[in-house]
Length: 241
Picture 1 (tube, rainbow, N blue to C red):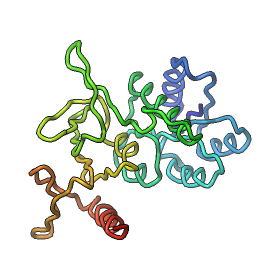
Picture 2 (picture 1 turned 180 degrees about the horizontal axis):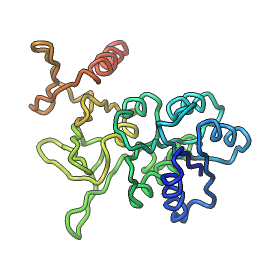
Picture 3 (picture 1 turned 30 degrees about the vertical axis):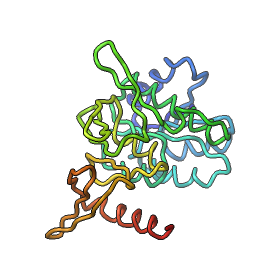
């Protein structure tokens, strides 16, 4: 595993958290995108990268664009103090998007996702690979929520609410990570607070320049930031019919 951050304190914290995972045998570090690229070129056994986004020189976004040209690119998770890069994470197919300071349980979940993503790339199908089923906990009880039953995901602080019809389920996930994990399953981000299943849209409305979508009799806003993404996504769907 490779941890990349230009701030030494943040890098030390992330490295220590990674060493607490039993599934990681070695943690390499880099203080810049350029140093990380050299390591990744020299070694072919780095399967995952936890990558800071804002760095002098070669930024995290720039590095991911380079890595996507690799024959066997590592799985990447962005780690940042800012939430302005979620669209980049979606566009670049980054595995996950973690906000600083990173909690151990949140990091462990990302490590599992990275392993599942690598397994899928190798042709090994796993349930966790596509996060097809999530665990919801209520007190001491837990139950599963199937991705295929979800139509709307709404951000709720450090959690999200997944809506299956009129029922909502509180999940300890981030909307950015679900955007990355579920995009291949037909989900699309329309707002910083909403991720939706595009096939569940019954109507798209534009009133006074403001766009909304109707899903399960709910009218949800589409922010300007995601409006073009939605438009291109729906045009792609109609082009395949």
